[in-house]
Length: 420
Ligand code: G6P
Image (cartoon, rainbow, N blue to C red):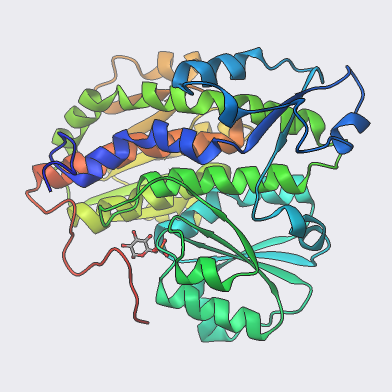
């Protein structure tokens, strides 16, 4: 077991640190760069996917963080380098999926949070309505599903009973079923019509870490794939693709903050409760942070949509209540700034996750002993949750160690829940 931990004291911390490589493995062979004629959009559509003119990421020798970064920074904003996505298990189903009336993402636990993080982008790029379902709730309600729905089942293990039962139910209703799992040959991967393997590598720690960030990445790649024929979405797709390639190295920089996070964990270790606020893409970050903290450190924690602050949660805030606010730069940053002000007005003790180029917030709070800042790189909004969860994975890990609990096997929980 010590050998499997590769020098780390626990599987969880090993898997947290494996994330830059896991992201690369998840992208390997799936992002294609083609030298197209400038402005010649049709060349993208007509591209012969097996032709040698395609430079497949996989074919880059000694694929490393540096080569990925070089590819990322080399991509210009015009169409000289027209990128496309290759997802073997989906190629024949793209048209069917795009003709669906709805896309319904179905999952449990952390996998559900990955769907929550990526939902907005799928809506934006496909223009198909997207809903999310916790598998158990969909089954409890026997929710209506139709032949023109596409159901997307997301599961690290591919064996979670609720998700598998929801898959059987959806198949019975005639929906097209797509699987996203991290386990080749799993029940969900076998029983779905089509799918994408996550390729994050084996995950042993009960609390999911690298599978979560790589699941988000896979859903982003699926959204890019589904929208490949949309000329109007091309600049947005280009922007996302460029940042995708920079993501592993940015993730590495976040991991370098571990000692700062450890200090923060010391400050919070004896608390009874930790609230987490986020909205938009980062509502998922708040929810996943809270799940990690409660399932591992047994500290009460709640993820709250910042837009709901005034509808109840504000009553919890006083000088004894620690609250994390995810306020990295995106179109909702002004609203998150207002959330911060409201929490401060009630004397909340704040931990702020901010963009490192956000001089306004950083300048405002530097030297303030009651406010802790965690700074991360800014990346394309839809990819920011992939970076933003990392400090909180580290926080939940160190909180758990400091509180003296078993970080790889929390009480009462299993890695794969195969009973309803
Ligand atoms: C269990 C695990 C969680 C996981 C959830 C869903 O509760 O402890 O970490 O997120 O199952 O598992 P799945 O394998 O379907 O992603």
